[in-house]
Image (cartoon, rainbow, N blue to C red; front, side):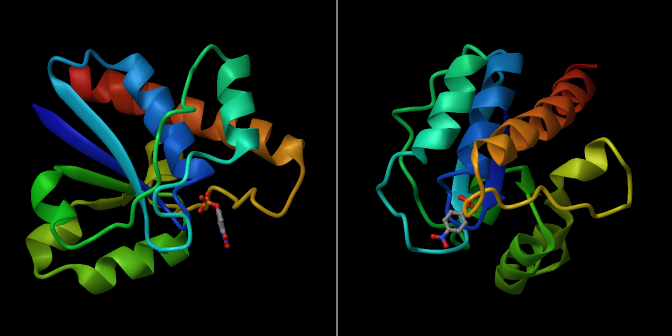
Length: 151
Ligand code: 4NP
């Protein structure tokens, strides 16, 4: 079983979308995909309605996901931790106990543009365009992740 965690700030916009997209590209008998936020503002909340809508438009149902906060035990529970932006990266790395933990943390867009540490823009304060843009970025990155992990 390979265990993958998607991390953003609120766990209501970007990471639940990344979770839903990657799950749809991998067989669930050999992969676990989950998501979490570095912040605690949206614990127990369903994804933002705009993330649910853009997922639905692309045939995915993420409406039942529930926000939770990233914690140090996630370093034991997951093999790969994908962050959406540099702020998420800093916050997750701050909780790492050793180099083995740190090595699990990767920028998701480095799957498309290696070593660039590009950010998936936070769409929370923007309009629906932002969510479509985020969907497209995550879909591209998740296609690479799914094919790499299965090759
Ligand atoms: P996310 O977006 O990190 O992609 O889930 C955000 C959601 C909520 C907030 C910030 C970002 N917030 O400040 O409440």
